[in-house]
Image 1 (cartoon, one colour):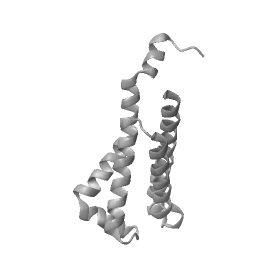
Image 2 (cartoon, helix red, strand yellow; image 1 turned 45 degrees about the vertical axis):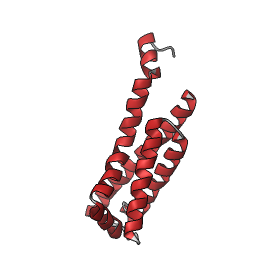
Image 3 (cartoon, helix red, strand yellow; image 1 turned 90 degrees about the vertical axis):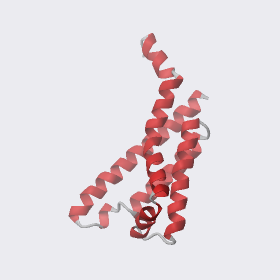
Amino acid sequence: MQLPQHLDSLLQSNWLWFIARLCLAVVFIASGAAKLIDFEGGVAEMRAAGLEPARFFNIAVAVLMLAGSALILADRAVWLAAAALSVFLALTIVIVHAFWRLPEAQAKLALFFALEHVSVIGGLLCAAIASHARS
């Protein structure tokens, strides 16, 4: 289907492509920065998830989120950032949002978080595909 010229130009614009990547990365930037700014809070999150040594995991997660975001924003190796962040999100579902093993009241919220993570994984895959197609 042929798009109107103004829509075609908009979808091919570099500024909209940057805004799309920024929207995708903002959750990782905020969470990664929060784990460094409130380091002890991040460590407590890791301990609550059963991840030890909690300090190491807090640093590793923050670095992964911020480095992945930087690659996405720079439009460099987006496939690598998407893969790494997708694996991280999938592991988060299994480790933190394991709705199948939680009491019903907690399971519903965990299911919603898991589904959001699946959606973000889809967005990461779309960004990797779009970045490859634009190169």
